[in-house]
Image (cartoon, one colour):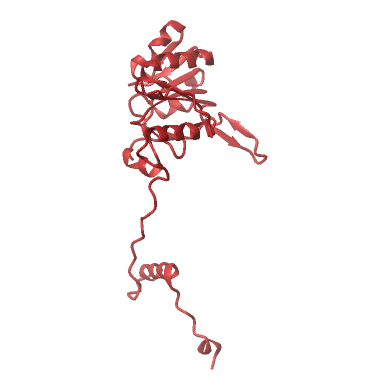
Length: 239
C-alpha cells in the first residue's frame, strides 16, 4: 500500500473549492461547480446619512486633515469670501471655467483681479503662469474628505484644476455633500472625466519628505456654502 492509499488527499472546500471549480470550468471540466453569487451586505456608509449638519462637520474635519484650507459661509457671503481669499493670496489672474455662476466673482471687480475665461486659448504653459482658479464641484464625500470634479458647468477641463498653483473650490451644502464613496458613485456619470481630490497635490520620497504641488495645486481652499440663515458659517476646529 502506498502512502497516497493510506492518506487520500482531502477535497478542498469553501472558497478554495470555488476557485478550483472556476478553473475546472475554464478548462472544460463538466463536473465543475457552479459559480456562487457573492454576498453584497457591506455597509454603504459608516456614519448617519440623515443629519446634513453632521455630514458637513465631518467633511470639514477630513478636508482639513488632508491639509486643505477650509472656510464656511452662507450663500449671500460667497462673492465677498472668494474675493477675500484671492486678495489674501495675492492673486492677480484667475481662471474662470465655463458655466461658473457670474455672481460668484462680482466682488473681484473692485480688487483689480483679471478674470481669464476658459475660451480654448489657455494652454498648459499659459495656465502655469496663472495665479488661481475658482471652480465648483460635482460633489464631496464626507467620510474621505474628497471632492469630485467631472468637467461639468463651473468646473471646466481637468487641466484647469491641475496646473494653477492655487485652487478655490466651492461646495454647496447639503445638496453636494454625500456620506461615502458608495453613495457618491450612483450620482456620477461614469463616462465623464472625473478628478477625485483629497487635499492639495503631494508626494513623499523614500525619506518620507513631503513635497506639495507635484502634480496639481500646492494650495487647495474649499468653501463650504450653505443657504443664508443656516448658521453654518461658524468655524470648526478639526478633530
